[in-house]
Amino acid sequence: MTVRRNSPEAASRTQADDNVSGKITPGLMRLIAALLFIPIIIVVAASAIITHLPPPAPVEPSLTAIVNDDFETFSLDWWLGHGWAHAPIPGGGSAALLVTEGGDPTRFGGGEYSDVIVEARFRVEAGEGRLYVRYSPAGSYAVLIDPAGGVRLYRNADLLGQVQPEAGGPDWHTVRLSAIGSALHLAVDGVERLAVTDPAPEPLPPGLVALDGAGDPVRVYVDNFTLWIPAG
Image (cartoon, helix red, strand yellow):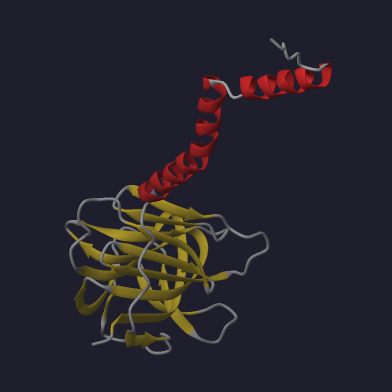
């Protein structure tokens, strides 16, 4: 009988092979499987986060301007509240609406509107200026403008968003409020600053467009008023 003995080199190779095989343990296999599933978990988690983000406010439809009033002459379309007047702008040589006692809004008499976009220029010397859409017994969407150019957007008493004033801003501020369904867009001086969706279950019903001032004292000029509704 011939007994075959492994050479030292062969024994070493066999041991090395055994060591490599021994490294692929069940625990190592579980770790490799977990690492392979991490990208899938990240994608699923990201999808869940994106799913729960609030939807963006819709883009405005095509519009038709039905009012464009620079207040050079007074229009009977306006119902002036107590404390309001059609007055010259100091140093400007033109005219505007002026409120010196708030609490009784001036209303545009063209009817009630649901989907509506309104823009006006405000010069707030004291107190605050206010622009309302869907103004009715159910409430309103209101923009409040302070003397520094800070702007806040409300549904009734609920704050929906605010815009901080810019240092060294102009005396006049152009404010544009769009209410299309539950989507509200607010632009200040030609730049959209807020786009929000009314969080209430239902948007406010149709109502008037109105202007007002608030404060003690209050002195607010309003000029260059434009009102749009969706075309068609």
